Image (cartoon, rainbow, N blue to C red; front, side, top):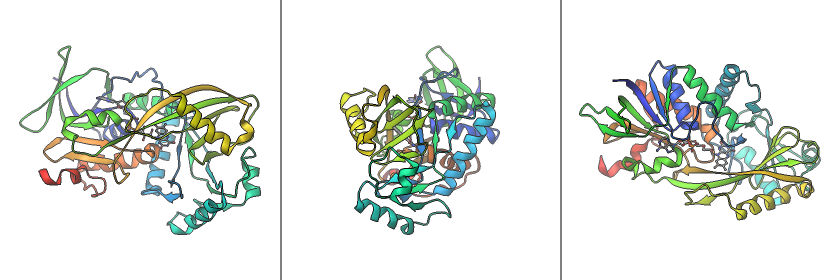
Length: 366
Ligand SMILES: Cc1cc2nc3c(=O)[nH]c(=O)nc-3n(C[C@H](O)[C@H](O)[C@H](O)COP(=O)(O)OP(=O)(O)OC[C@H]3O[C@@H](n4cnc5c(N)ncnc54)[C@H](O)[C@@H]3O)c2cc1C
């Protein structure tokens, strides 16, 4: 009967990152995901690695370590796949759309402990030089280390890398049984059986369906994006983050989004969300009106926790069962660094800080 060090549920950013960590540590890994096809799985066209969080551009959690980890992986994937276009060095521009925001943005530079060279203020003229389609910006924050990731390509390359490193992928469903030694036996409906020292739930919004973790206050936030093609070559490359984001793809492509729809557990594409995306995009770049056509719309579901940080670690009453989810809207930035923390814990028993550890939600039952 096959035995794995870990069975990972979910082959998204979290599942791929923890599987990769474990494979690099010489461990055997099975990845279960009903939606993933190794020949190519549809995914989001583009998203942003943006170390500035929220409305007032706060430095995100452990940003330097997170940034270094995702960059390292992106370069490994580009080298492995031979695809040089998994990311684009776009930087991130956060234009101030009014004077109040300009004041707050300038204050954000000193309010947080930004690494040297990570953030600067540029005036209105320079902002317009960089992104001529912006409408009368009041200056902008510029984050040169932010970058755009072409997520579908990135994830498909990642899964191939994992298979190359020895991971087994399956789309089958399994019934789990905890064994007396704390390990798990998994049986598929076709009678396939294997054992696993660890089960890692990295199933994004599907993680809420694992009853053992029902005490964890995971919250679903649906998001929709839309893609567009302009009728002319666009004259800016920088990723723009204002009332959402506007990202570039190719000479004429735009990815704009996204909505925040709380407590939604469906991937329905709605006209209301599309109109909201259009409204925000034209508020930032009104000159695009009449010059772009819609080429697509997609929906996804983010998972968050109250402290807006991922949740990782072993279930206190079922130590063979771990979780890695709640990457929120910073999945790219968090995925690799947090996977390394969880991986170190599973392989070498390294501690997990209280702000990430799932145990905090089980205090009463320990
Ligand atoms: C519209 C939108 C825009 C976003 N923009 C950005 C951005 O610009 N930058 C950024 O960093 N982040 C962004 N995010 C957030 C980012 O996409 C998420 O943080 C990230 O996808 C979470 O990764 P994950 O692996 O935890 O979950 P997911 O990506 O949801 O992957 C979970 C995987 O688990 C599988 N699964 C589900 N249930 C099961 C099950 N029972 N068994 C096995 N497998 C299962 C699913 O098929 C899926 O493949 C955005 C999210 C949305 C929705």
